[in-house]
Image (cartoon, rainbow, N blue to C red; front, side):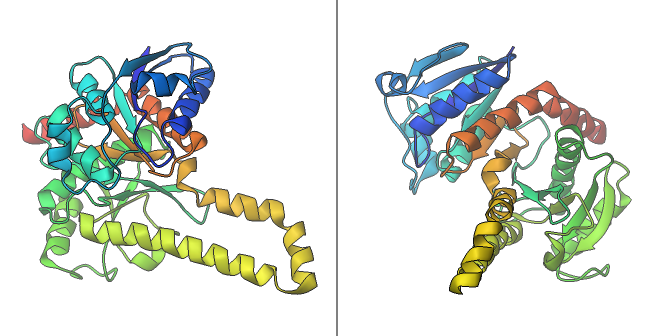
Length: 332
């Protein structure tokens, strides 16, 4: 049985959407058991089916706008987020899913779950839909604003195994986000990372990839430091929303536009769904001893369901153990 801890109080629409998403997951995945962490009386208002679902009562919640995440975790050890994370360290659960405050979740994961042995830095790695209809892993999307090239190599190992085992991409290619495709472009960080990737037999390195190719990438994994990759991710999100709004405005102009819009409604909905992060589930925090998934703060039940599905897939495929084996070999 795969045991998943759910921070049921974290998120913009908690706990209703978290509880309903958990019930959807229980319905579809017979090998999953879920423990909801939060205020018991509140959670029970939304829990219609407690099959393979337990509740652990907690007394506090970490605010979505928390400014001091480390203090929040250490000062609220009975919060739903902290208790869920701690359950993984205690091996009561195999994974945590949370829509709570991102920086608090990262800090809590470091403090309460801990990094894998010999893993120097963690990373946040969302999965991005691509124009051809595939998926691409983007990292690090905000975990480390500054990083050493050798740490990026470890993150590339993790992303490669994740892409192969979870996304089903055979021999995934790794691309380095840069301002040009030629070798020698960019900062000292980029040039050293390029050299390390190129010389590493455990990484199928494509080369440099420009940001303009992110949605139609020549590689399956795009990597940079947390500052750069976070800007890329937010640019994608903002551009997608802006383009969708402009398309809607143009299609609603005049009677003919409204008729065309009505006829194209199904395709417009499919377009919106392809760009919806909730369809993926969440972003995995790479490099921890346990599986931690950061679902979007605005996740509704379907998004939270997909985050639970994602977490259970990672546990089933034993991704963390496979990454640990490669890092141990490198260390030896």
